[in-house]
Length: 99
View 1: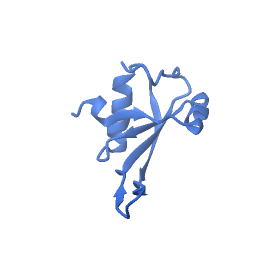
View 2 (view 1 turned 180 degrees about the horizontal axis):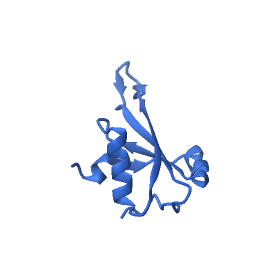
View 3 (view 1 turned 180 degrees about the vertical axis):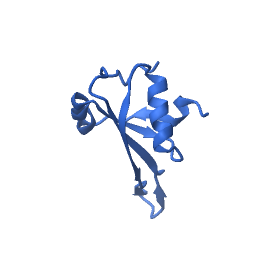
View 4 (view 1 turned 60 degrees about the horizontal axis):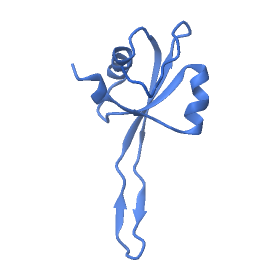
């Protein structure tokens, strides 16, 4: 089994993701080859006592950037996000204090 900290890379810090925390919905950047089952097991391993009810994933294409003075184009890396919903009887998790 992979290390859970290799699957869950970091939480997504945005206004929209903070608004979903009250509904026990958390957004993470995950490894691009991680499956929904691996993401569920990683969340339950990092934060023991929390039960995941649903995992949604989406692949985000990296943006294309143009140089300031040159016509050179660079591309930011692609990322995979996971939207994790906890069960109603689970307590909230502190996403910035990983176990």
